[in-house]
Length: 620
Image (cartoon, rainbow, N blue to C red; front, top):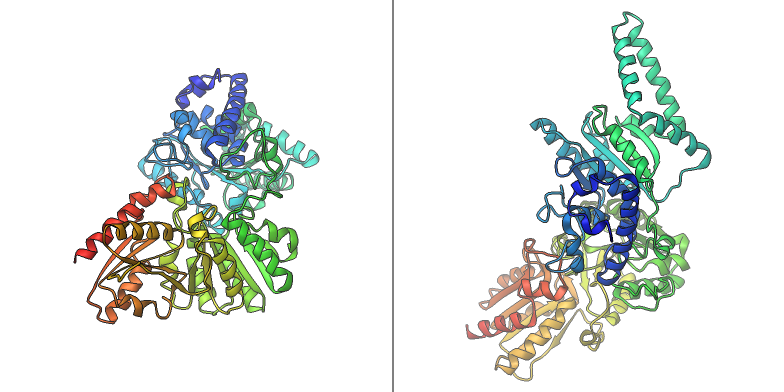
C-alpha cells in the first residue's frame, strides 16, 4: 500500500497525478477485499464505486462540497480517503467505523444514509441552504440505479428549482455503454467537457441576446436542436424535462476522464447537472462481479474458499423461510412472493428458482410492494411480502390504507426483526412491533427458532386478512432450537416452585429471559417465563394468567414507547390489576454499530440486567 498509507485526507488525493490515482484505486480494491473478508460488510457496491469516489475527491473538496450517498453502503472508499482507514479493523463493530455515512463520525459525511431513494431530497435541501446562506461549494448526490426504482427520487427531481450548485450522479451498475450509440455519446461528452465549449456557448448566447427581433427565436431554435440531438443520443428526455443538464453515459472506471469531466463542471453555473456514470458492481473481485447480489452484504469469509451462494447449505432464518415458502408454493398456485430488491437477503432466491413466474422483485420500492400485494390479493392471489423490518416502516401508510382497510389477504414476512448487528442506527428492526400493533386489523406473530418459523408460516398462509410474521437475522440459537414448537399462541416455562413474578418476552430475547429466570431462581426468586408467539392482539388467556402475579417484567427487543409491553399494561389496567409492571425495551437513542448482545446490554435486556429487575420487583 505504497500510496494508501500516505492518504489521511482528501487533500492528499488532490496531490496525485492520473497514474497515481489509478494505482491508488488498485490498492483500495485490495484493501477492501482483504478487510471486508475479515469483518463482513458491503462489498460489491463498494468495489464498484472506488474509481468514482477517487475522482470526486480529486476534483471536489469536502466538507465545502457536500457528498450525499444514496443508501450509503458504497461509502467505504470515501471513508478511507477522509482519514478513517484504521477504523476498518472494527468496521461495523462497537468502537469502529460505521458502515454508512454518519455526520457525527466525520465532518466529511454530509448526511446519514441507510435507506434508499433519500439522497436527492437531502441534497436538494442542502443545496438550497447553501444558496440561501450564500455559501460556496457544490452538492453532489450519488444515486445508484437501484434507487431509481423508488418514487422518492422522482419526487425530488420534480423540485430541483434550477439549483445551479447541485450535481446528481447516476451510478448505473447494470447497463453497459453500447458500441453504436455509446461511441457518439462519449464523443459529445468529451466535446462538452472542454473549457472552450463553455466559452463558445456563453459567447453565442450573449450575442444572440443582443440581436433584436430574431435573436431570441434563433437562441430558442438552437437550444431545441441541441435538445433533440441529446435526446436521440442519450435517451435523456425525462431528466432534461425535469430541468437537468444531462451528461453521459461516462465510464465510471476511467479516473482521468472522470476527473476531466468533474473539473469542467466544477465551476460551471449552469442548470442542475445530471451525470450518467456506468460502473461494474463488484469490480475486481470475480465472485462479486458474477454474483453482486449475494456479495452486496456479507459476513466474514475465506478468500481462498468462496462458496457458491446458490448451492450453499448454510442455514439462517431467511434461508429456512425462503425454502419452506418455495415448497408450499408447489401445492398452492395462488402463492406469490414479493421482495423490494432483496432476493438473496430475504431467502427468496429459492422461490425465484422454482416459481419464477410468481416471484416479483419490485426494486427499492417498499411502498409499491405493499400496495402491489394488496392488488394481487384483491384479485384472488395469496401474496407474501418479505421485507426487512427497518424497510417495512417505509410503507406504513400503504399497510394502513391499502391492506388493512381492504382487509386484504396479505402476509408480511418481516426479516431482521429485533436487534441487527453491525449496521447501526439505520437498520435496527425495533419499530415494527409498535407501528403494526397500532393497527387493530393486523395480527402479528414472532418466532424464536426454525421449527416455529416453518409451523407459523404454513399456518398463517391458511388464514385470511392482514397478518405478519417476524423473525430475527442470522441462525437460530441452540438453546432456543431446543424449545421446539408447541403450536400455541404463547408458551409458559414455569419455575420449580410457586412464583409471584412473571417474565414476559418473545423472539430471540427468550434466551435472555430463560437465563435470567434461572439465575433469579438460584437467588430465591421463582419466576415463570411467558414466551409470546402471537403479539397482537395479545393471545387469549395470556392477560388473564398474568393478572394473577404480583409483578410482571416485560422484556422486548422492540421500541419501548408503543411496544407490546404497553398493550399489556393497558389491558392489565382495564382489569384493575394492582401489581407492578416493569418494561425493558430499546429506545431510538443510543443505537450503535454493535453486536446484538452488546445492544442488549446497552438497553438492560441481557440476562444479568433482567435478573436484577426480577429481584427488585420481588421485593415490592
